[in-house]
Image (cartoon, rainbow, N blue to C red; front, side, top):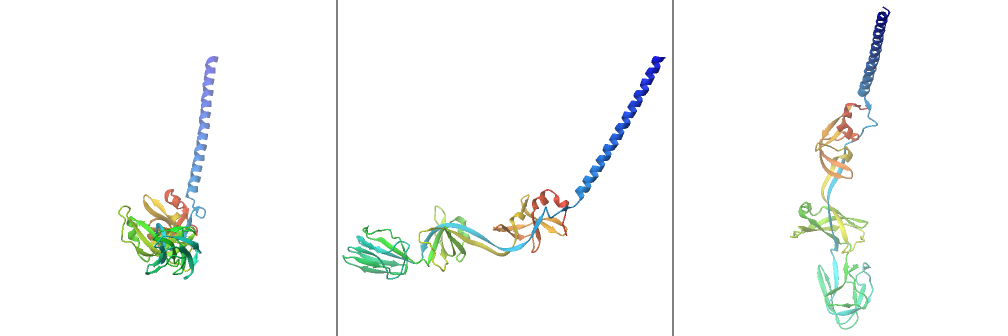
Length: 325
């Protein structure tokens, strides 16, 4: 009897303990579920809360700018007006009074020769011929300009037909550059250009385009007249770079390059419309100094996103952002 009562008492105690355990787990489960519901509700409220746009998005207005498309070519300087002093018999230089690059005036002495000489000063518009005997002959400048191609020194011998010295007019310079292939088709006389040599930049204008095409390279010569009131430091033979303006658009719609986005191969921008933003496809043209020409898709005065444009497009922030008043 005592053994049977002991077993019943133990079973009762185990049942009570199990009930207490279940009750505790139920209480814990209710607490956990309640906490989860509270956190989920807070999360949703936080997600739906509008974010301030000032720290995430910056916009600029569509403006108007001028755009140029330039073509770069390389070549050399030559003078439109040049005078050569040529020796037509052998001889020897006895004196030199000028230096290469020096400015000379008409009638100024250049050098002297000894021997039997025939000296001719040839110019583009004509020539003069003068014959001398076997004595020292002083040569003077037939025109005003700058001395070039003075390669001889006192005592040097000269051969028949050799150019002793040249005089060029630096107020009438031409940059003769080379262009290749289809590039030449976009060049026309009268187009503006910039000539660059070392630190010097000179304005110019296309004066001619050669009709002759090199069969091997497809190259054509383009002449650019230098438009400069003051005498430049360039000399004929100097190597230069030219930037020719082959296309010019005045007062075109423009946006900063950082506002431009690529959406699956299509150019788009994010535009501020009222209290939100929208994706807008656009057609672009030329690029210049950090700006992009807009041919269609935008109007004057509209605002496009620069900072934060990528996030608005690709991360869905536009659903959560409220535009500040």
